[in-house]
Amino acid sequence: MSIHEHFARDYVGAREKFLEAIGPHSVRLRSVQNPLRGPRGERLFCDVAWHGPADAERVLVTISATHGVEGFCGSGCQTAWFATGAFRELPPGVAQLHLHAVNPHGFAWLRRVNEDNVDLNRNFVTHIGPYPENPGYEKLAPAVAPNEWTTAAQAASKAVMADYTKRFGAAAFQSAVSGGQYTHPDGIFFGGHAPTWSHRIIASAFRDWLARAKHVAIVDFHTELGPRGYGEIIFALPDKHSGFARALDWYGSDLTSTEMGTSTSAPLVGTNGDGFVRFLPGAQLTAVALEYGTLPLDDVLDAVRADNWLHFHGDLASEDSRRIKTQMRDAFAPNDPAWRQSVWTRAEEVLRKTAFGLARS
Ligand SMILES: [Zn+2]
Image (cartoon, rainbow, N blue to C red):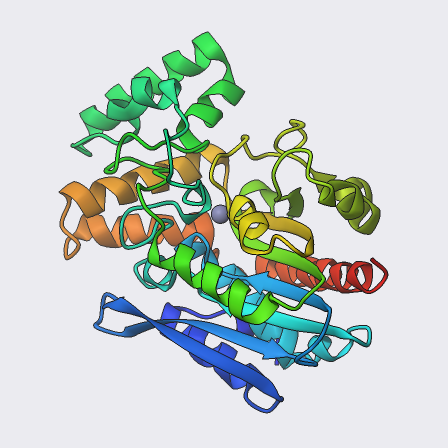
């Protein structure tokens, strides 16, 4: 079977492939159902799978679909990990925990956000006290998330965004748009005003399965940024976390950091990593986002903006919808065997490095 075949065409297929791949092995599985349904009425689950000694002190964790539609990539890698037998080659004493489709709603609906229009990877602020401010987003909000998606409206938005970039630079633009915002629930990269369902699923999975672990290493799969098919290893814990030196030891100079400005990602607020640190206060933590490039950033942002317009102002049964959902797939889940092959090759390398790093930490 080629690697290509472990990557699914839709959420239901992805779940079937994953469950089939873990089926023959001694995996403890807990499936948690999301209260909502997919576009064809399908039920939605986050599936949590544990393999290895129950009392392991060292645990490798993988997460797919933090950003919904990006789950095609992460799920494909989690499935291939079992289907190819790679999962067996871990050092003794290392257990593994796989969170398949933590945002199944976004996955099924081909959205980056969850059922509340929240970017899960901006939702891990404490939700106590004031939210981080993002004055740049406030300026850009009407342009990045317009009410209309006509040719004229798109051109007007582009002019505003180009002007902002010209005045403040491309990095400031990327940061304003994608760094996270808490003022526009109908906008893009919105962090939410309460812990989302997916946030609570991750918190309870970590507390239930990892309470005894002394060393935990997490690989969270993403797509969209960077050169096509390349998997960037982005440090995913808060700035100055002690895990950085350890991650550098495991991954070498391939490791990047948003805080240090070496990543293709802007610095972010309220990330999964902020949650990991809170949920596992007693464990030695190492966490990275494995971020695969797809299309140029402008095209990815266009897809996200169009999808936001579609769900707030458009018609999901329209021709517009079919076109925009194709844009979303192209931007986050390319149906391209060569891309998938390079995704898996890199994933296998990173997961092995993580497991062996964990074993000697
Ligand atoms: Zn992502």
